[in-house]
Length: 294
Image (cartoon, rainbow, N blue to C red; front, side, top):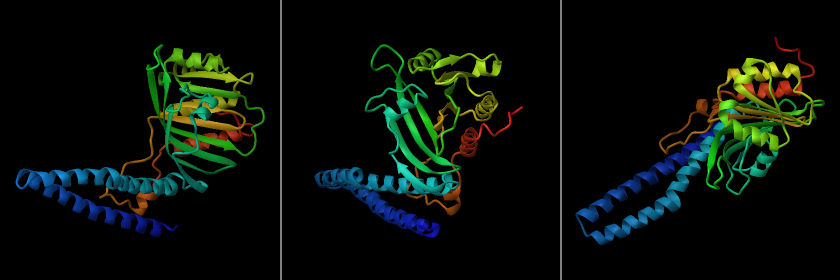
């Protein structure tokens, strides 16, 4: 679908909803007049009918308009550098897959993970994906003692296995209670690394499994990623896939019926960290070819 057709479809949906909304609010005024001025019973019956109409149809249609605008913004703005981008919506990642990734603690139950506005596409020898995510993990002895993490999860599945890359994870210290995080990493088979450099010791917790050490020339790039973007909460890498979690960073907005996005707005990238994260993924693919960063 061309950009012109997308804008025309959004405009048609918006105009239709505006007309219905105007009629709806006119009926609300009529209900108020009937209740306080005219016979109250007809007004109450009409009011109940309007409430049912709002919750059953009008609110859903308004949400669908907002979701359509956001999906086009994701595909044409955020996913512009990707080849064959696809809007995934609320699919493409499960709580058990997140738990198996062993990047951050997550409670693996039916309500342990909420994902929305997912996308995927091809880029630089792999499949890039992303979601807005919210998940919880247990912080106390009681089953109701939970803490939550919310933000954007970006992943890349490499077309070719990165030979020699061990599995490792790096987490910003203030993201998760240190005791809980260290216990989680050890339960998942990670060996905790205690680097000598102060910038690592004060800011990051590192874990390593299925390998002897994190490649030395990756560490400066990893440090630069955390230093350059305050929202980077965690990074995970294996020889097959890499992932970055951006804490409290989101890329969608709720649009009201009166808002009609322009072509410029649909093509704008709503995630400032996008290119730096994707560049880091590409560097991981080529780390054996790259020179160490000074």
